[in-house]
Amino acid sequence: MIISKQLLNEIITALSKMPNKWDARQVIQEWKNSGKEKYWRQMEWFGWRFQELCEHYLKQTQMFDFTEQRYGYADFDAFAEIPWDYKAHSRQNPRGQQTHKIPGTDRRATLQAIKDYGAAGFILGVGDAVFNDENRSFQHWHQRLKGDLSEYERERRSRGAPSRVRKTAFTLQEIWIIEIDKKSCKNLGSFMEGFRNRDGNPRKAKVMLDLNNIELIYKIEFSCTSETP
Image 1 (cartoon, rainbow, N blue to C red):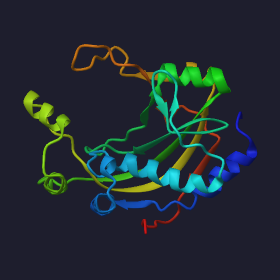
Image 2 (spheres, rainbow, N blue to C red):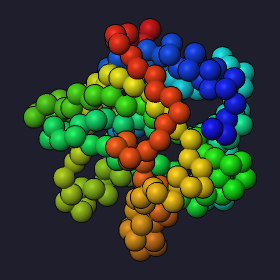
Image 3 (cartoon, rainbow, N blue to C red):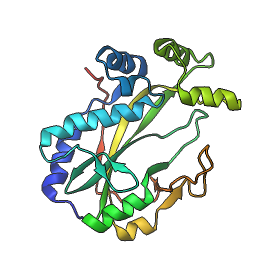
Image 4 (cartoon, helix red, strand yellow):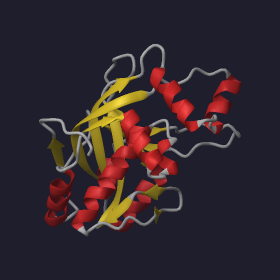
């Protein structure tokens, strides 16, 4: 383990306090009321909620730097002895199928972080999502709240592509604390390798975190549910 036992204990203590039951309407309305423009318009709101809560509770450790951690190709979310990224993951997709793979950070940025500090860290929030009903009432509610279509939504409609089913609630069951070093990074798969953007330029490959095949240094488990105040 690269990080110190002190840092690990601080992370565990801080994140164990996190409320783990989130309702999409409540969260988005709270963001809108408080003027958090970059948050409340987001379709994948639960990832932003996890990031927000991680920052809130990890600030209490006074060991984390939340300024931009740029590695030429991508940003990490924070720094404490090593660079850290937050990811939230639903264990089931809208069809009820189990999912265990999570796209991580840019692969080259991850390798550079490992070269500089010996490891890159990931804090993964793993849980169960509730998805929109057949009438997509939550999606329509969110669209009315926004008042206009995002660039992504306009582009999707122009292509005639189907709209993704939105998450309406999320219950955080576990937080995985992971360290990726040079050896373990070689065993990780890649995501978006060979893919191209709309302008034809190749997308940058990301590391793929496989919950069924990854070593973790600690797992926080939530035995009961508590809502965000």
